Structure formats: C-alpha cells, structure tokens
Amino acid sequence: MKTKLLRKAVVLLIALFLVFVGFKYISFYYMKKGISATDNAEKVKYFSKSAAMLNDQSRLLRAMTYIEMKRYDDALVDLLYTVKHHSEYPVTYLYLGNVYYELNKDEEALKAYDSALKLMPDYIAKELGAKSATKTLAETYGMTSSQVADNLTVKLYLDRAASLAKLKRFADSFTDVEKAREVSPADPYVYLARSKIYEMMNDKKNSVKDYNTAFALRRQAEEQMEKMQKQIAEKIKENMEKIPAAPAK
Image 1 (cartoon, one colour):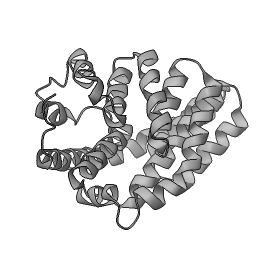
Image 2 (image 1 turned 90 degrees about the horizontal axis):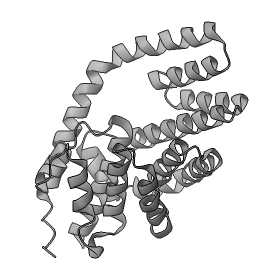
Image 3 (image 1 turned 45 degrees about the vertical axis):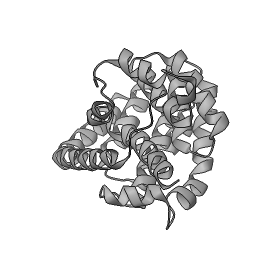
Image 4 (image 1 turned 180 degrees about the vertical axis):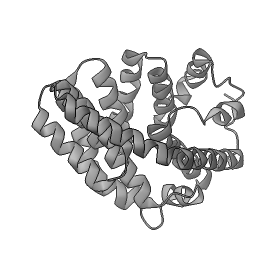
C-alpha cells in the first residue's frame, strides 16, 4: 500500500514538474524502464503494452507523451479517461485545457481551466496537506507546498488568459494575467503573456515594454532555475530508484 501511494505521488509530482520545466530533465524515468527518452513511439508502446497498465497514472504519462508528439487527439482520449476516473487533480485539467487549446476548442479549454482553478483549494488541502505523500516528496526535492501551489496557479491563470485572448476577451484575459502577477510578481512568463495580449491588440508600445521586462527577469532567474531543475530532477531520479519495479505481466 505504501509503495502504491509513493508511486502515485511520484507520478503526480512528475506531472507537475513537467508543467513548469518540460521534458528535458526526465530521461532517468525512461532509463529505469529501459526506454529511450527520445523515442516517443517507444514510450507510447510502453504505456500501452497491456490493458492492465492503462490506469490513471499510465494514461496521464502517455497523454503527456502524446502532447510532446503533438498527437493532441490521442492525448485527449487519455486525459478524458483520467478526468472521468480521477477528477480531483487540477494538473489533469490543465493538460486537458492545453490540448483543447491546441485543437482550437477554445470554449472547452476555458471550461477545463475553470475546473482546475475550482479544484485548487481542495487540492492544496488534500494533496499538499500536512501528511500527504506529495507534500513530503515535494519537500524532499526542495520545493515547499506553497511553491508547488503557486507555480500551478500561475500556470493556470496564464493559460486561461491565452484562451481568453484568443477569443478576443481581452479585459478578462488581462484580469487573469494580473491574478497571476499577484501570485508571482517576478515571473517573466507573466509579462511575456501580457506582452502577447498587447500584441494581439496592436498595442506595440506596451507589448515591447512587457517583453523587455520579461527578458530582463528571465535573464536574472535563468541560472538559478537551471540549477533548481537539475537538483529536482536528480532527487526525482533517486526516489524513482527506491520504487520496486512493477511485476511483469
């Protein structure tokens, strides 16, 4: 039971980790499984190898691989399954919203982001609560619960802002960007998002101003972020090695 909870928490934290830093630092996960991190077809084959494997965890990881491959229709199938059977995680709705965005299903994307934001309070209380496995692992990787929650919240607001801007709901889009800025005022992606909205409105002056701010903030944070990413990736690798391999089917 403890191993199952640990595996579940690691998978969820990997999903959160990928939200923030992408796929660059998770090659060790596939190495442990004997899979090439650059061979997406091989990764899909691994997560699809038996019906018994297609649980919430493997479907979420396969969906993330499909997203990396830009196979959004396939990712959508797995994400809808995950949402149906395991609907309490806002990160799943975040990926679902991103897939809908790429498929130009903008209203569906907004609904997914709305669902994710509504789930955040319960998620913080349950999954990042005092005794949760996810909180314990996050702290093991040098991340506080508030950092995990804040990073996910900012990502959700910025992605919803992009969908709103795509629908030309610029006032609502700016509101979401401002909410993200309140959570993380030094995040360069906040200003980059606002720069893109200004660009869509043909406000070149403010677009360039925010872009320059984003560029300056990114340069300041880049070295620190690179160091943090490597540290977290190494600690996830260490924890993956502690989890017993699943029995062969």
